[in-house]
Image (cartoon, rainbow, N blue to C red; front, side, top):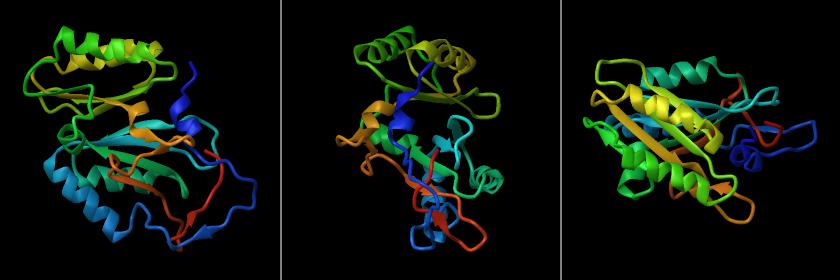
Length: 202
C-alpha cells in the first residue's frame, strides 16, 4: 500500500545535512508547555517520521505528558513529530469522526469510508481507547487500511474515545505542507547539543 501524504510532505536533501539549535525542538520548554496544555484538554496524536528513513512513519497517540516525553526520549536524534490536538481539531470542525462516552455509529464509519474514496491519495489517522482504561491506540492508512480503522472503532464501542483525522485535509499549498492552522507541533528530536537537522531523508 502506498502512503502518500507523509512522503510528499517530508524533505529529502543531499548529505551532509546542517544541524541547528535555532528551531524549537521536541524537548524545548515552549514545545513541552504547548503539549502539556493541550493534553489537559484531551488526546494529542500524530505521526513520527524516522530520520534517515529505513522504515515508514508510525502513528502516535498521547493522553499524558509522561507518555509524550517517553516517546521522544526513545526516538532517534532528528526524528520528526507532527502532532494534532483532538479537541482543537473538533473546535475547527476538522475531524471525520469524534465520539467520547458514546459508541461510534455505522453512519460515522460510512461517512469516513466515503471520504476516503472521494479523492486519490486520501489518508486518515485514527486514535481510540476503550472506557476500561486500555492503552490509547493509533492507526494510519488509506482506504486499503479501512479495516484497521474499523477494528479500532470496535474496540471503543463500550463508550471510550475514538477520533478520525482526515490527514489529507490538514495539508495546504502546492508543496503539500502541514497547515499550521491545524497542527499543535511540527518539530524534531534534538541531538545532545540541542540541535535538529535542517533537512535529510525521512
